[in-house]
Image (cartoon, rainbow, N blue to C red; front, side, top):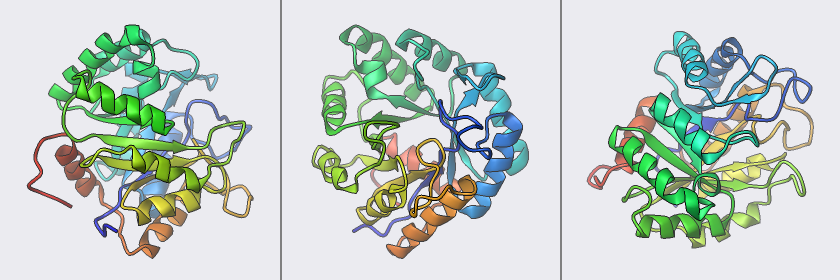
Length: 282
């Protein structure tokens, strides 16, 4: 098992949940900034950022992203790495997702393989934008919902449809419904499809989140916790806030003998991960 530092990202809101799901979910730039401060204090290295319309509806918009990032940075400076999402959220087509990301050109972005590359007609345009963003310094995390998604991603890379070199992947365990609860025993299926040299993290739905993330840390992976995927403690009671889930995850990581990365370490890790440089390790 690797004892290298572990990236701990918080995903505080996601595309779907609202105040009725949990009163402490952060939806506005001001709420995101406050949550960032609390999660930083609890041990987070990074934040995965979704933005919303005033009604709470999922939004992809360059201006809204900039407003949220400005608010967060005013509160925590550069102490958290900030990753934006390109998630469709049942609202955006692949071309609309690409348009927003091309306009915004984020430093860090997550892209779901099945959304951008699930349709053969989207592969060329999606691949071109991924290569362009990577050439401009954007660090991409590719989201895979199944080992089959990961196999598809590996094939895309072999064909040159996505940037060559080591990738940073997010394995999603569980889902919002049917069944909602993540099963840690699904992780080996992803690892069997993993290409040597790639790095990976796990997010997990439901109160088994902690068990899934502890297993990821134990196996040398990285972690993403928070209300986007899970609102509950391991005992099934609602967590107080995102910071509580971050603190719990940090403790589980440290129990494996690893420590949590700082934001500066996370930035170096992603630069290494998105380049051919294998001479430096964390």
